[in-house]
Image (cartoon, rainbow, N blue to C red):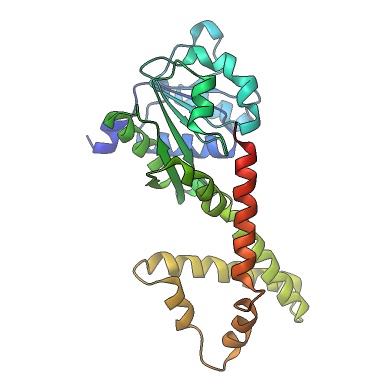
Length: 277
């Protein structure tokens, strides 16, 4: 049995099976977590989720009397729902329960205040590439998290990508602003590149195909060149005095992409702080 299989919990309750919750669920099943070890609480399950639960033997929205504290309770609802959901979730925790929260902006202390019976809490921030197993998740843990629970966290979150442990929970909001929200920045960059191509005279559909393929290919090149700094990759395609250099003189100017991105991340960081409490 692999180390990851050994780290899987005997029982897991997932609260919220939207895009991220469903992505994690798919990763767990692919990794070998048994369906009969999983309970899902999702007030409006889509037909695909219902069919998956039937085929895999997953308990979907069982009656309250059937619910017991699980070894792992994963909170994947909207952060604004924590207060209203907490009273019904409290009985699902106990001294041996590890709570993994992916609620943006909600601190470990916020979750502990709502679920005081939970033995340990992990705060995590994944991102949407988890849907294809290419996500990255920043993780911080309460002092009560045991080595076994840390291994379970690694296994469960590692099923959808890379896991980065943080020494200080205060860094989670910055992780949210960079990688949690970051996919939207990349998608918007693609939109803008396509519109710029259209403004330069390209047919709209062709410009979009060029922009998408360029972003996709560049991302894959960067992934396969993990030992090469992004700046070096940029330099490799920039001939002195050429077309790329001309474009970069705009993007790297005083009002270019770097200060704009810094402001964008700062705005996301500020909003994450507003969501806490």
